[in-house]
Image (cartoon, rainbow, N blue to C red):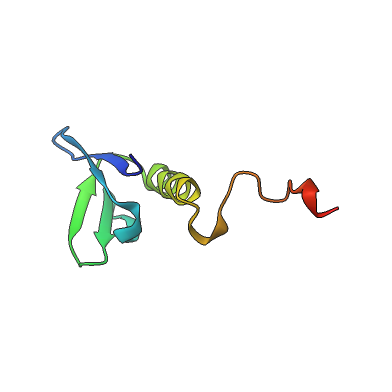
Length: 76
């Protein structure tokens, strides 16, 4: 599906679009701020969210972030 699954502090899971995440902070709870200014607090750790964003970007090939970077033998 391409979205990032997160969990509110009350245990309810839902997904967010990684393209609209502006910042992820630990305040101490993990707070996600979206480009719209909306904020949500989630139970996942900041590092988990960052890794999920990177995986999402790789999946949709944003900024050329692919798993096979540096393994291109076709250029020889």
